[in-house]
Image (cartoon, rainbow, N blue to C red; front, side, top):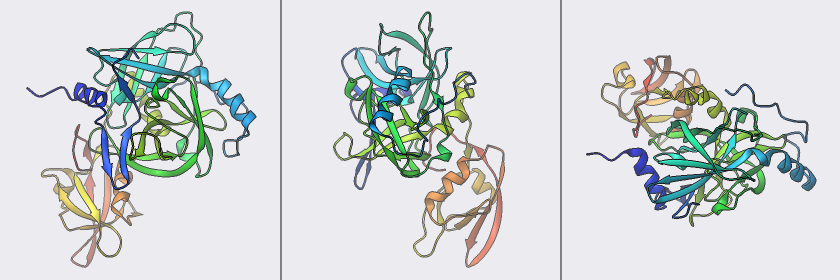
Length: 354
């Protein structure tokens, strides 16, 4: 009998095994696990404060922390006798909380902790392995919740100041500061596909920060902290957050407990040895690309009119579309260029191809 992949993911995280090898170290999921116990319409608009792109003075950071930190929580998840922890943040006054899927996926029970008061039981409403996001729900009771405002990752600029708040190593309410180091990064997802348009930051992210917010200078969440590039298992100045625009896109489905459908082209690609473009290495038999006539060896030079200069340009061009949508793929084959129209399929749960 095959093991439940959600439980397998949780137990692998407990053992610290979820590290993807890359040349300079590894991409580690920024959750800490040990044996201890240890579109949202009513989110408020950002309060007046420092412009999101302006440098933050120490006093600004302190005021910003005081304003948003009550909306950041720590998450405790259990699978049998094993426990793990991460972070999350409040979306609305109904009690919806956003975190990472790898923090709660496969857990038997989940609790959240606020800065004050006893832990509160939480229900996992929806999860999405493709984006590594999960939605929790608590019953607020008499507790006054502090929802965080959601910004736009698309409007970020490199060099823009940001802060990260979470529970690294179980240290609740920890603040770190930094800038947006890069945009449009592609990081490994939990389903063998890539998560596109990740936000790179040098704000320290460590095990336990997973699911916590990356916040701009105006107090708006612009990303969900998820991974670090590391050779040691701890922060080395390169962290990644899931773009908040992706979270906003799938929140309605998570809230309803529905699966999130994503487009599927059905190819694997590599960089061209000479010139630009993405060379088709494989096509999925019976997949959209193969059915439309793409072949291994074809060099993709454009997707929907947008130039493709390298292999990593293909996935973002596809992921922004919907299943069933027709997309024109411009290819070079045998020295001749032609356009092939492909009707995108629905992404399977796990694959090594786009």
